[in-house]
Every structure is written in structure tokens, then in C-alpha cells.
Amino acid sequence: MAKENKPGGMAAEPATPPDTLPGTLPGTLMVAEIFYSLQGESSHAGYPCIFVRLAGCNLRCVYCDARYTYEEAGTCRTIAEVMAAIAELPPVSRVEITGGEPLLQEEVYSLLNALLADQRQVLLETNGTISLARVPAAVHCIMDVKCPGSGMAEHLDRENFRRLTDRDEIKFVLSDRRDYDWARKIINEYQLADHPHLIFSPVTNRLQPSELAAWLLADALPARLQLQLHTQLWPGCLRGK
Ligand code: SF4
Image: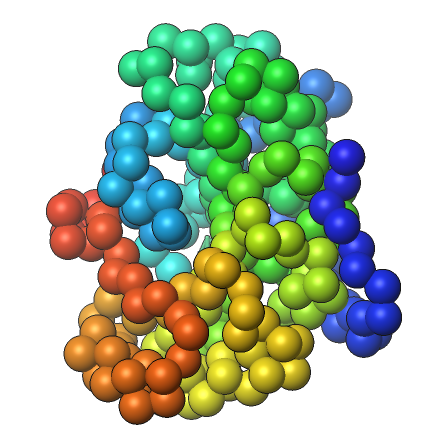
């Protein structure tokens, strides 16, 4: 079952063409890495989790700390090989598919369904530029909304705000006050204030968490302030973390 596409939505902005789509064979995925760590950036933060980081991204955010996902080709793996690699890691239920932008690869849907069939709790972290309509309803989507400070805000598929369910999470990634005001406008425009998982996350070394905290408190926004756990635990190191 696909994500609900609620009626009455505004016209979608065009999503970014996948100009860096990894060249995959049918039944395979280009994989940057598979590893075991702590989930770091959602309401699942702090829980042990297995990560499948897919190669390729259609954005070039100015603060990107995962450039290797699109500057390196990755490794071609079949779905069965990815499932076998996951099975060799510690026996945790939670598995996150991330990137790069994982929805660029057609076979990601096969992987999501294989993980659900394996009774996994499946998280999908996406940059929100590609329609979520084909993502199975049981998957927990974590949609990173790239605000103007990323340089990529115009690529957001805003219709995705109407495709998300209460299971999913909306994470605004903020660089400055302009991003904060932009996020508030989006929340009002798409009536997101009642969404149970609204997250505001400051970009490390660009926006002081205490400054963002003061803005949230002043406006009494129904959003959760969240810091990037990985930058505190493993500063300067994302690969394999
Ligand atoms: S969407 Fe993520 S991986 Fe892609 S450029 Fe932006 S920060 Fe980097």
C-alpha cells in the first residue's frame, strides 16, 4: 500500500530531475555503505539501528557532509546481497535506508518491501524532492526539508507534505533566521502544526542551538528542537557512523 495522497492539495512544484541517478542493473542497487550505529536525527534518535546508505543524490546542499555518496560510485549489490549483509549485523529490528537520496533508485521499493516482509521496522530518510506516493505505508519516512540556506529549497516537492502520515516525520534543517521564518511559513501554509513529529534541527556550525531554542520558545512552536547526535558523538566523521 502506498502513502496516502490526500485530496485537495495545491499543485506540486516540479521535483529535481535525477541528474545523478546511479547506473544500476535491474534488481540491483548502488550502495555507498551498510553499517550498524545509533539512529541520530529523528524521534528514533539514540536507538541502535542498521543503516543502508545508497549512492547518488540529486541535490548539492552547501553544507553537505555526505559528499562521498555522490562523488563516489558506490558498490552494485543485489537486494539479496543487501539483505544478507543486514542479517550479519547485530539483531536489531530498526533498519534505515538513507543516502544521498535513496528514492533516486528504482529498486529501493523492492528493498523496502523485502525489509517489511522480514518484520523490520523500516525508516526512510529522504530530502523531499521526489514523490513519496510509492513508498509503502508501513515505512517511517523522515523527510529532511532543505530550507533556503541549503541553496536547494526550490527543488522540494511540496505535495509531499500532503502525502506524509502521522507515522512520518518532518525535519526542517535550519541554517539561519531566514530558514526559520521560511519553515514557519510552510507550517502555516500546509497546516502542519498538529503533525506529531515536527522537528527543527540546526545545521552544525551554522546556527547555534541556543539561538534556535530561543526562537522556538518565543513563538511557542509545536516543534521539537533536535541536535545532530552524530556530530556530538563522532565530530567530523559521518562515514560508517
Ligand atoms: S540531500 Fe543530503 S546527501 Fe544530498 S546534497 Fe543535501 S545534504 Fe548532501
